[in-house]
Length: 149
Ligand SMILES: [Ca+2]
Image (cartoon, rainbow, N blue to C red; front, top):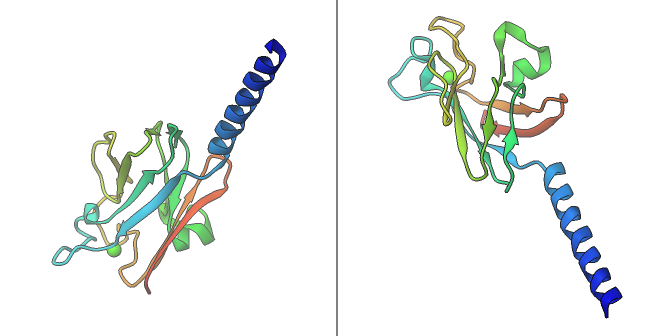
């Protein structure tokens, strides 16, 4: 009986380890929304009227430090005109979401700021359609979000 008990516990341990491995490999952070414009607001003058929102749908804390958010042009051309946002030291709790605003502001646990000053080239998210890419620290695209053209 002791051996059977041991085997059972070992099997349970392996099952548990397998589950946690699967979790860490799966993509749990998703782009859930891109707010490309606000009616009546000129995002060239108020870049914070644009934002992209991410959510951690997993059960583990995800370290987003040095991950990247970019748009279609930033994805194709690299860091073209600052179209790649690099996360500061930041972790996202399970079930939590964070908005990355295009403009300037003070980062919090729920709001991050790309840091683009008002001006003609401030906006990132095209009002007539665009694609957001979330890229991890290894350069792998972990999520893509397209809104209508
Ligand atoms: Ca826009």
